[in-house]
View 1 (tube, helix red, strand yellow):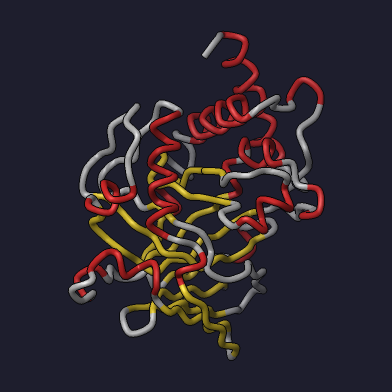
View 2 (tube, rainbow, N blue to C red; view 1 turned 60 degrees about the vertical axis):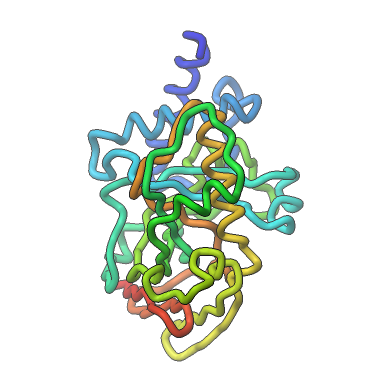
Length: 267
């Protein structure tokens, strides 16, 4: 990274952090702060992660994918997903109780999270079979996103990348890998899930998000940008149902049917 690129990345990161602290609505970065391409956007994201490392959110503790579906990508004018980080101090275990007032534009998503049993190698391109063989844990999970009231009809993807793909933490349920039968890890691409939101119920299959394909994409993305996925770091693989926006007092559970559930309440 050149000195000028590094300086621009830091300026973008500082502006995003300022906007978060001020509770400002998500808007496209403009002028000299506008990322010109994916490289600049991810450089700004990495600068934001470094900026936050000594703060309450902490170091990078996991990874996420966003815009995983073709429908989402078409709405945003791209043909690929985007990636972000999960901060160490925002990884919670079920049952979690979170302070609703701490979030600005909070959304909840319902995901499969996976970890690997060894660090990936920077610069290496992995096949899905290689990544699948490394899976250590499989969890039902919630992701909290902070969209800051974004207008979804006009989202700028490069700004969203720079803003760490909106990740505000995750809640992990129990590891289900030991519970799976002889099909093992490969079963996670075709499991049934159930969301219970207060008294409402919704179901969906994990097949729509292709967790193993998504995990492989994240691993190879990190490798391409000079980073790696560390052993034990969770990767969330895309929401199996539409994002919902909670109110204070809501209680939510998400289960991988027949195996385990994750629970969250907003107080």
